[in-house]
Each structure stands twice: as C-alpha cells, then as structure tokens.
Length: 507
View 1 (cartoon, one colour):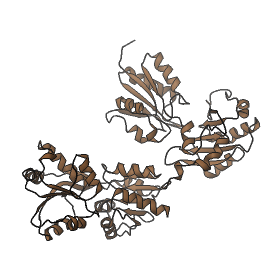
View 2: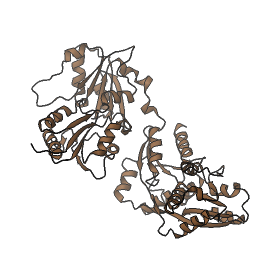
View 3: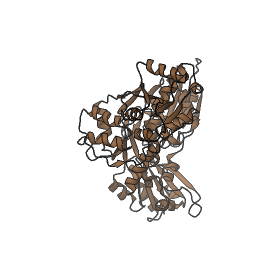
View 4: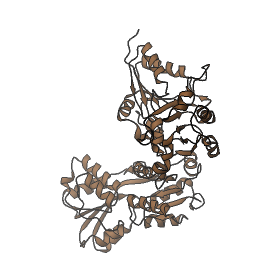
C-alpha cells in the first residue's frame, strides 16, 4: 500500500449553537486541508476552518442527498490517500446516529489514520435548551436514545417497542418527526400511558428553536397544527412536563426578534453576539467599512509633532481613530511613551480602546457627544489640540473648540466608506423574512444604507421595521432620510443601545 500522510478527523459539530462546538473540534478543523460538512452544521462553525481549505458540502435532507453515504466514504478515503488532512464535520456527535462508525471502518480498511472528536448530541442539548432535563431525581434516573428513522433498506425494525413501552425512563427519538404518529401509537399500544408528557423540539439550541408540548395522545396532531418539520427531537416522559417551569432559552427578552446590524464588519460581531445572548436572531448588513487613509503624510507629521511636545491635547472621537493612530505610531518605531500630550476620549468604548493599549485617558465627558467634550474639557484657550478623525467627521467639535480659542489641527486618520451591497444581499436582509428591527450606530450607517438602496427616503424601504439609533445625532440623520426612530438610546453606547432595545420590547 502506498504511503501517505493523510488523516481524517470525524468531528461532531454539536447540536447547532456554535458556542457548543468543542475546543478540540476547532483546533482540528483549523488544521484540515479538506472540510467535508453536513446540512446541520452551523455556518459559523464551518467558517472556523482555514480560508485555504477545500470545502465540500455533502448535506442530506429528506429526499435530497448531495452524495450517497458510500460516495461520502469514498471521498474521505480518496482525499486522505492523496495526503490531505480531512475534517469530516457532522451535526451532533459522529457516533450517535451519525454513521461515523461506518466511515471509521472504511478508513481502517484503507489504512488511513483517523480520530473521532465527540460533539454534544442534540439528544441532550435540545431538551436542555427547551427547559427539559433528560433525567431528574424526583422523576426518572434513566434515558434511552432511539432513532426515529431506521435504515429503509432493512426488512424489519430493530426497535423493541415492547421494551420501550414498559420503560419508565425518558425516551428520546432523533429524526422521528415524520413518523411521530406511528411512534406515539406504538408506545401507547405497548404500555406507555396516553397522558405521558411529550415534547417535540425543532432546530434545538438555535435562534430558530421551536417547541411543541402535549401528551402521547395528542402530540402528533399538535405538531401537525404547528407545522413543525425536521430536524426535530422528541422527548417522551415525565420530564417533558417540566418545560413550563424550566424554560429559559426561548424566554429571553429578545427571543424571536430578527435584528439587522449595519455596523462595519470589524465591529458588527460584538453587537451581534450581545443581541444573540438576549435571544435575537441577527443579520449583519454592513453599510460602511473602515479603510486606512490613502495619504497618511498629515497623520505622520502630526504624530511627529506629538512626540516633540507640539500638542497639549489629543482628542479621540472613535475606536477607529485610536486604532489608526496606534498603527502609525507603531509603524514609526514609537510607542505611547513618546506621546507628550493629554488624551481625551469621547466615550467609554474609545476610552477602553486606549486602556487596552495601556493608556488611561485624562478626560471622558459625562455625555458622549462632541458638544460635551468642548463644554467639559476645561481651560483650553491658546492650547493646541490634535483631532485624528475620519474623513466624514462632523465639524461641530473642531468649531466649538476654536470658538473657545483653541488651536485645532484636524487630520484624517482613517476613512469611512459606503459598502457596495448587491440587490440580493439587501433583499435577503430586509425582505425575507422581514426583520423586526434595524440598528444604526452612527450617522454614516444611515447614509450607507440609503446609498446602498439608492434612495433619499428610507421610510418606504424600511416600512414595518422598527429602527434603533445609538443617540440623538444618529437619530437626526435618520430623520433627514425620512425615518422617525422607534428607539433612541439615552446613553450613547452599545450598552445603552442594547438596554434601550430590551426596554422597548419589555414594555
């Protein structure tokens, strides 16, 4: 047999929530040169692989198989024999109805090294996220996991319905929503009381999670009425009755809300993650992007003046300004010890960006707008002030500082560009299905969306969608484009915006 250095990792991607993916799974996925992934694997997990990897989708849905199982197995063998490290990424756990055992046997027969990285199975994760413990000291001390979809090529069923009917523990059926009526009938016929609490959970652990509760007698009809389809997990047993008491995941304050985020790509994930933790399903539609200044000469000259003590103050009005200044400082073989000026930050996020670099700002205003900086900074008559800013910065701060007899130098530290969004991207974010809320974290995000949609009045394009603005300046820009904001944060920060959104829907 020819020697090769290939290897296959059989990796469980977990039940859906990317946060439940294991650390070892991430490490092996990043190592892989070929990634073979299934239908139920969340896109965020797939993206954890290398940008240079070969990605092969082999998803299976009812009646729709991209590749048959023997073709998938042959693919794993072929890529590994060519010397590649292959990640076989499966929803849930590879060895819980995942056919990982069959693939492992084929790899052994071909002499290919392999490892299995277990994943959290939906059999326990989906019930947990629905508020159903699969065991409970006062109710049951055992659970049984059963396939609800046996191999159709088999001549007869391997499920011992008599044993399951007399089993007093929790029963968990995977992939069985299409056979729910038959499952319930078999259990009742073999001794399970018709009043046994039963729950069906679709898309467990994800923002699309839906749960239908009932009894063995009526669960099939309830699921049919609710329109629940695969993928779903069915829980039969007394523990299913605990859902109303223990439900938590779908009781969070923003559960079921679809929120569009318009921030730049570098900053959108923070807001998205915070909203997701509160139950929202988020879509990122970055209407702006941050780019370096094409001519940094003025910024470099200003930094040289700073290091020579030529400025009394540097005022940073954004996290991006701090980053651009720091990058150029580093590029000039300097560090913050060479900065001989007092430092101001417009708000807590900008201040934290400075602290992350070991700099404690000398001044942060009580209200996080330019007008407050000019009013609260103290004695600045005759002082020299450097403003490293974006190319589209509001002129108010410089004007107000000059009115107080300060000498102000404005330099472009970075650019804020409008993102060129195609019609399909816009339609997916705004129309199908319609979001509940769109967030604006700066005036430039409002302008960026208007430009992307090629309109001067956003009211028709966003009809029926609530809007949330980070503060009054952004809100005024929204009004200029025909929008009356639904939500305006009273604290002009991401924390303040999130608090205002939660308060709006809590009310």
